Length: 317
Image 1 (spheres, rainbow, N blue to C red):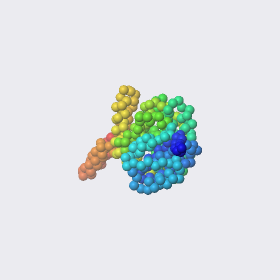
Image 2: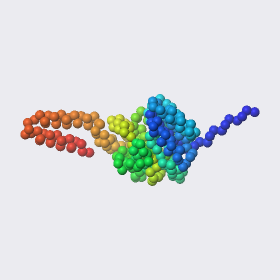
Image 3: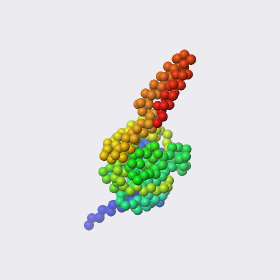
Image 4: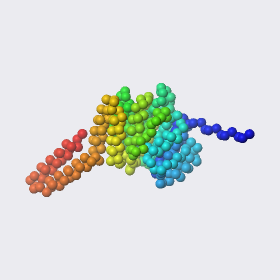
């Protein structure tokens, strides 16, 4: 009689998806924050997105140390694609996204699971976060850097998400915990090098799931020099592209159409420093000032003052 095949291990409650490209030095911190969770039923899917540093070796060692860690590899296709690869392989009922350079606190999964299990139907949970310096995640450095609250306001979360994103609202991906059923038919746009999270959250929120807010700082956002958030030209382009697409998709909802129309104008103001119009403006001002310096002394100060007044008027919202 042939032996029976070994039974498949039970599915974990939470699948944690960790996209990683050239973050070998940070990845152990992210995985250590998972191993410290008070809720132990999780799997960690490290998606190596074509790293050229020591990520394959570091991820392999982490998988050997803990059988809950699995390593998936793909050619460098971006964060959105890496998250999609993780979603396709996920076995848990719930999904947690965690970038390789961030971390979560030990009670994060347990606290949000408790909230989700009380919700009617597939839901998502949001927690608060704090900013930390690059080399010490234990330090709450929120007061010295830019912090936007993840707390939603109003009765329509989708409207709030569309209206206030990046002005007075930010929800880092690892602040969220999702029921995996919300991603049936939804994936990240792999053509967006940034704002792919906002684009995806809008589509999830359009399903109108229950939203649970856990009022605790359970996620740690590592502030790094040279991160994607430093490339403002790319961010402007992708933000505008995502907003235009959602405005088209939601054109039959007058409130959301109006909100996203206003959002397009706001994005233009927020990123004026890297917009084509802004660059033309700076060149024109520099030329005006240079011409003023060549004028006779009697009118030089008046010309320079006129240029500066014009610049200030154009720069005001």
